[in-house]
Length: 250
Ligand SMILES: [Zn+2]
Ligand SMILES: [Zn+2]
Image (cartoon, rainbow, N blue to C red; front, side, top):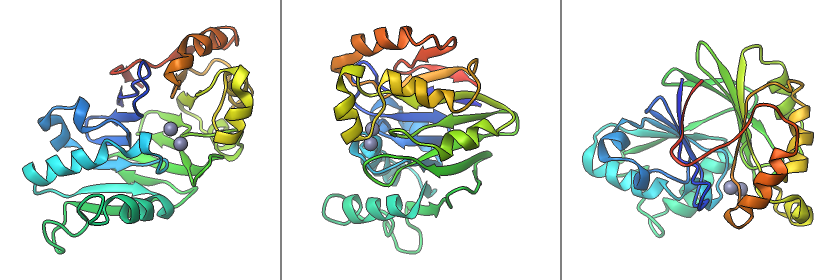
């Protein structure tokens, strides 16, 4: 599958990944980085959690789609996230309720609940959400097509179930794991429920595949140099720091 990252790690404005042109995982980026034609092709947006850096690209994307497309787009996640999107964004106060617009019978947005621990297929891609340890209800995902699987951590602190599941996936080709703070800020990382480079190494070990390609994202821009330096000393052989607009074939 073709993966395009909107993870703007230089400025860390937001997090968003585009898969096969039709599916987004998190929507921190969205309308701003894509042409109208590219936006029109997106059929599903899958969310790890509600934090603004993962959802803020959604309202402008939906606004554009409502103007140029008749096909509904689905928003998929666990119920807590879908309810949050409805209650806090598409509530006719912050933004129009596009779950009922342009008409209640044919809205531009539909929701799909992703049951935790079970696989749901969307446009030929399977998603299995697994709860992780963050400050709000958050899931990571095992994502796959017919050839390969990969892991997306969501925002997380120390966790278990996701790594245990990933360890059992036979054709796991890559892991995308966040690292937000440098090791010196491990106290803040534990409060904000994010990883540091040392914690990343500890968590990555739990997958039991030291050679697995590991892509690091969600680096806080003021600490980029520090974190990059610390990541380089971890001894993880296939570690890459994701860049904005990077395309990967997995
Ligand atoms: Zn978060
Ligand atoms: Zn985040």
